[in-house]
Length: 370
Image 1 (tube, helix red, strand yellow):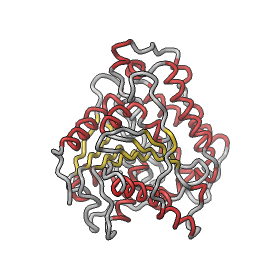
Image 2: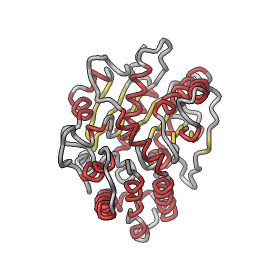
Image 3: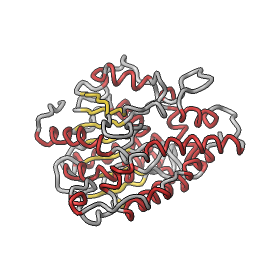
Image 4: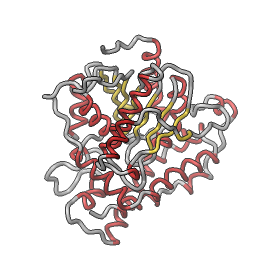
């Protein structure tokens, strides 16, 4: 399966031309920024977990390899509600929540899983996640919120399926799922000869067995991804209000660096992981009984299939899977429509319901499952 050209499409993101158009944020807006610290927000640092027995056992069995292990980065805070972030295919989790860091860090420490650029293993990711959740519960007494974005939400649902029947089920404070993608059918309907989304048309040749890639196909896909990015970049005024030119350049460099750095094997294994995720079914019972916030964007049409089974399930009957679940549609009445998992370009639209969710958790008003 030829996947590397698909990833190279993102290198055409036209953000460079937009940087010079941003005015530096004024003092008042800078003071109100959401990125954690008002001046020079620190970068997350590598985190060495104390509990590693699940991942080490998996590596010892050779069911996964060290190069597939996700990097874990950490920003420490004294708050009672730590957050674990699982990103989508791209960008890395650290960049995806860059503008939400203030909200998340106000509640407690932040832990970001940045997937390996040289490989990927769902089994190893689940083992790492279980180890970290155990550490936060057993060593710190602080059950976390897991904040999962797009493909990361599919990984979260898979992890919840695996841990649901465990004798010592991991303790969680809550869940946030942003634009969940939990199976291939969310992007490419089974049997569809012509996908109805831009992303589906771009990905179909790389997911099909025996597909080949030629320069014309790569260029066509590059154009599709550029259009998708430009749709998000229309929210330039909102970005310019909270990001300086230097920060915007750093964010662009980090995102494109991740995309360019993912090698052929890493790309193949990420897509293979998505292909192995199961379509949600109700017959096995709830996935988690903790407070859960599910957020979809008003314009998911460039990414999600019209009849995405995950979206249909979570929008219509969220409490079948999450008894304390709430599904909300994120809209923008002041400008460009909110796009799939657009936590960078439409942070100001996603932030209010996320902040309210964390306030309920911190105040104890959200009922905790036993």
